[in-house]
Image 1 (cartoon, rainbow, N blue to C red):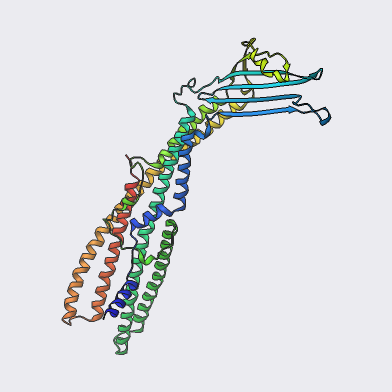
Image 2: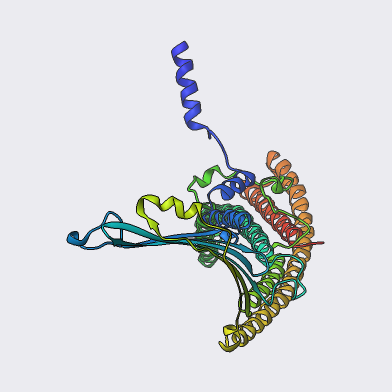
Length: 461
């Protein structure tokens, strides 16, 4: 008895679906496995890092270099004949400014009366560089480098939201089309079975001399048309399911797709970011801001540069090699100060400024035109959705009436069939009609729901 029970449980498990896939399940699958979403998400994470570290725009630059002159072996000394070392530390600052500190040290060695003497020379220099077109001179309050990085992060964020929204919309569409095309398959299967029953009945009547061959041929032709429509519906269903699998980035058994319910909480698995903003419109606006900010940075970077430098001078006496520290101990305060001023005017003569200005004007105008065209297209598409919704709602009212009428007719036919007042063929014809009306009714309700969703996710404050 126990063995039979175990076998029964095993058979039940293998003949029952272990799980099913709802629209919400597919939405979660989409967000986790779609290649375009994953790529856009990775791009957004890169922009977050860029905004945090500014791509090293204000990272200090440190360079160290050294050189030495060493004589051949027969003339070699304990020390190189010449030695030079240089350290430069430069710190970029907002507004096209930078501060640099340069320290160098050199010595020359020479022999006199078999003694080695050193002549040491330290050097120190401070330099301040400033663009003559910093962002504050251009009327910009915030640093364009930081502002541009932040805008690019926002642009990438809204780009990600747009891709999510667009791909999720396609997912919903493929899901609904998969269900409606499957219903169409069942409609045509029902029709083919009904035609087969009618043909068999007509052949029986023909044998009794109560029907003609032309009536049979007419039914055969109707059956053939239904079979062709069935094949088209099967091909459409296959295409929609394959699109559904492709967009989800995973393969699954289409038999696991759940029957759709209109009250399903479709938004719970879909993150649209700020629902009050159109993500694609935000990307257009941010592109304009990025172009403006980049133009400010460009003018700042290609303006003449003022350089101020201050260099103290130190004199160290020549000493014996063993007494090199004595020169430092005897060194007084700087013997002189050198103040330098320079102006790099080369950007004014390069022609680059005029080229960049024209390039900016072309790019900005193109971005403005694209933005305006998008707004027009968005309004047009939204109105199309509303028009289609109105048409489907009208069809829904009509099919609801027909379905209710079909149910009443089927109830009457069922009672008549049970009383043997009508034939089985008449009863089956009524049953098939009401079943096909039910499937058509479900399809219309699905399309009404689909366009309500499209209107909702494309309407913004």
